[in-house]
Amino acid sequence: TGGENVYSLEVENAISSHPDVTQVAVIGLPDELWGETVHAVVVCDPDTTDEAALAAHARKTIAGFKVPRSWTLQSDPLPLSAAGKVLKRALRERHAPR
Image (cartoon, rainbow, N blue to C red; front, side, top):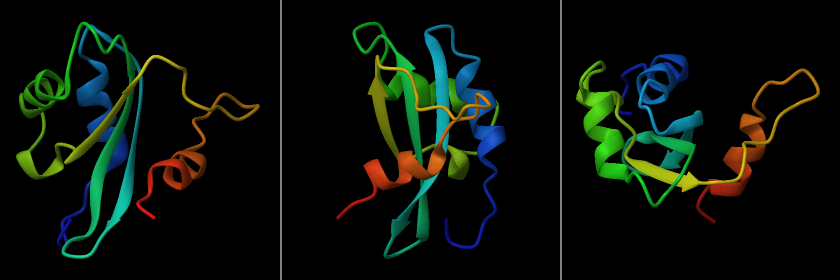
């Protein structure tokens, strides 16, 4: 994000505190201008919340440049390893622009 450090755990904690969110993973996606942009993959009911509501909620606890620029809202659970960790590499491959 233009040389600023954004820690995914900090952003995930801000988003996961929203009552409609059941799982969240934050990844960096390639961006020609900024190097990487923040992308959030959120497991929730897309009919009860939207990207704007989640972004407004996150802005209450983190700086504006850390709020995701793009979002994926889904009802399917995130891919997990055998140890129960989110497979962020799989998410990057799925959501990276081609």
